[in-house]
Image (tube, rainbow, N blue to C red):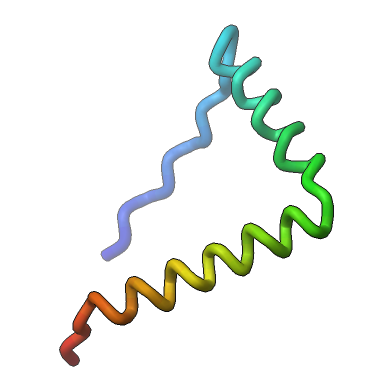
Length: 56
């Protein structure tokens, strides 16, 4: 049986400011930066697949 989902905490003070700052930085990425991040992620995933053996 699944556990109940807890309520999302409300951020106050410095935690809220840090969250807002990071949220704004993420929204300001250009298309080129997003594409570069995606290519980097795909490369890292491919490398990880070469090192990790999955047994079913």
